[in-house]
Length: 232
Image (cartoon, rainbow, N blue to C red; front, side, top):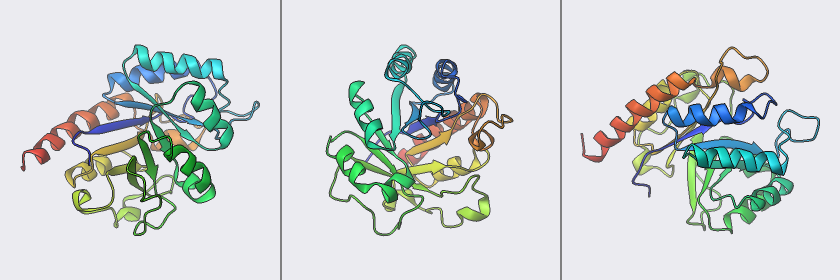
């Protein structure tokens, strides 16, 4: 079990295909208090698609993360992306909800590396967790609906400490639901991150947090976590 609070800034495709923008997103994520800047490898990643990231560009993204002292992580969507991740010696992995369902063999390959792996279960049975034989897994409670409305979240765990989940992967509007999850014992929060919520290039911008919102979430969230630790 984790004894620290982790905030993941899901940059994903919010670079809009302008990979130079990744560096500013990384910088702002660090300033906003994120521990991890997360990208997606293998999703909409063909040469003519929005998220095509060649190896040299990926190395520059990792270099930026190192420079700004924020951990790099990526979701892996296919075997080609998995091979790409090996070339940068990726130290932490994210598994998206759809990958758990669509490609469990790939998930097994990743887990066998014995590196910290965060798995969202937005499309899976939350009672019978997959891959329970591995001890390098952190499960994230999730709803695969974009955006997720409060009425969709009535089954959000009331007590993460006594659940099977270490944290929450969020698709809601605002930061209230992630903060609610922390009050209930969540130790990992993943939230989409954008510089402009009004950007209509992809749907993720509207359900993302701006740097100011993300900073508010991490500041208040870490204080709540500390209060939980001392039994308040």
